Amino acid sequence: MCTIVPISLTVGANRIVPTIAIPHPLGNPALDPVEEKALRRRLVEKALEALSTEVDGQEVFEAF
Amino acid sequence: MSKKKVVHYINQFFAGIGGEEKADHKPEVREGVVGPGIGLNAALGDNAEIIATVICGDTYFNEHLEEAEAAVLEMVEKYNPDLFIAGPAFNAGRYGVAAGAVTKAVSEKLGIPAVTAMYVENPGADMYKSDVYIVKTGNSAATMGQAIPALTSLALKLLKGEEIGTPDEDNYMERGIRVNYFAEERGSKRAVDMLIKKLKGEEFVTEYPMPAFDRVFPNPAVKDITKAKIGLVTSGGIVPKGNPDKIESSSASKYGRYDISGFDVLTSETHETAHGGYDPVYANADPNRVLPVDVLRDLEKEGKIGSLHNIYYATVGNGTAVASAKKYAEAFAKELVADGVDAVITTST
Image 1: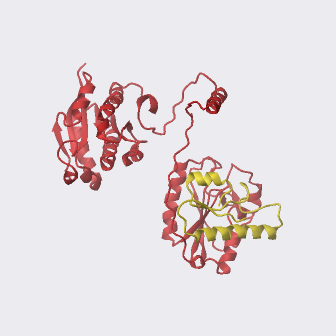
Image 2: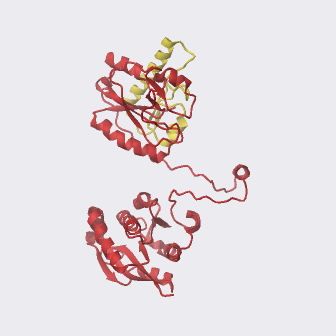
Image 3: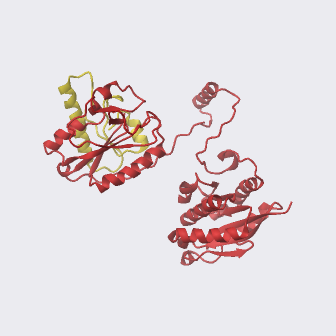
């Protein structure tokens, strides 16, 4: 899970979930706490979906 | 000046003993030159002479690494040479590994200058290029004619104790060593000059090559995520409050291993970030923004995952060398496997 997807592609990650921002990849301080946690959950569920998906090579799994 | 003494190492094939069927040939030593040593010896000219040749089968060496290396060292030491040369191994994989290993051993354990030569894609090259001088050759013995002058040129410099130039100047593989020097132009001027060359489509040479990243095959998908034990790893520097392992804010020299048993959520009271490469305000206020413990605990309770592993691993990715990151991951990946973790989510900042 990373914000700068080109770096993850360069270093060779195979299952990549793009995140929100460098200092808060799995959150957004502009949202209220309930919305923010829902956002985080959506990202983590996408990561779990990526882990459950067969891939041939590098694949980016967009949560949004 | 009397001729300096050189001992040469070759495999069973170049010694004329045989191919694959003789690859289990045990180490032996012969006086004088054998095989490619004839050409090397001629190129060394009046400066040096190959006084003995050590021969070992490639399979034997690779299957008996320690014994073979010890036997070769003993043979080399007996002749007390001024220089040791192995190969060239071209693209022969086991030969390259053997040549790299003996070159390293002779140089480090006997303190004798040593050099080898092989093709850049020989597996021995990656294994030993940071330890020893490996002269670049073509991929087959058909390029022996170019390999010998390149190899002897570097060998003679080592023999005479002359300063070794850059990898480009002396045709060896980069060893990852930085050398300070005074440049004629300042950095900003050099950078702009390089940019202009790039824009014009002219050739230029970078002063800071990017590391070559390796690739790994993707692991198979997790069959049933609702039964899986999920681990967490981060380069975002999330550590227990107070940073007990004192992980550095940049160029981290270590990683931490932290227990989150009993934690349903990370808070500003319990955790913080050690990372010095991003604004820490948001992660310090709510560390789940980097390490999503709260959500994974919810998913664990709801049965959406089997469990959240109670140990997480963290380092600071800020300016940390790729080689260090790789070393940390190799160490803790073994623990994750031993702990029965089925899949890992890594978060980065």
